[in-house]
Length: 223
Ligand code: DC
View (cartoon, rainbow, N blue to C red):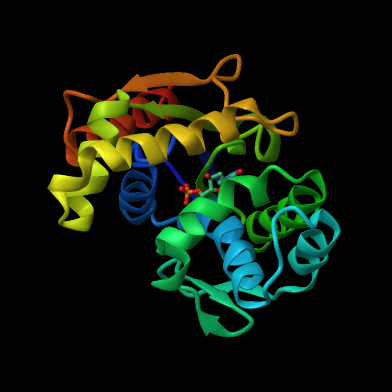
């Protein structure tokens, strides 16, 4: 039976480097939905702080920045910060280091989450990925997945993506630092929520994960 995907919300959480963006983007394209990279929004706030010389320890100034920045997306889901492309600067190592402390500030999340709800309201349906989209942002999503892989495998994937395989140990340490902050914070920590499907992806390539999720959502939607 054909399934009408318009209006469907698929939420995907998981630790850094688990492949969420690649998978979410491919799923969105296969189902004709838009793709929402919620991490890019926190990255854009961190980038604005770097540019404005705002330190993560000045929580009030960071929160002000989060409510004042204008965030938008193009049709491919790429983020714009105050009208300028956020890529590639939001992926810099300086942003990598700053983004987890910035995202741990409750007032920052309070400013960003309504913007995520707004994107969903405007488009009706979407594929969203992040750390809290299955538990806090879209707990009522039609489908919720927790995408996981071992720390070593995630570091290997990131290093391959960066074309810097020789830095795999250093990248693994950096991912571990971010995971510790993302999972240990008090507000909306990364966690496997009740009823969320846990997918271990060490032995799958990106297409394998996409196929698995498509089979799962297709089978359940056809019920
Ligand atoms: O997915 P990413 O690596 O681009 O995310 C960057 C950071 O943003 C991540 O370390 C934690 C934070 N984040 C968050 O707190 N909540 C989300 N929904 C998405 C990302």
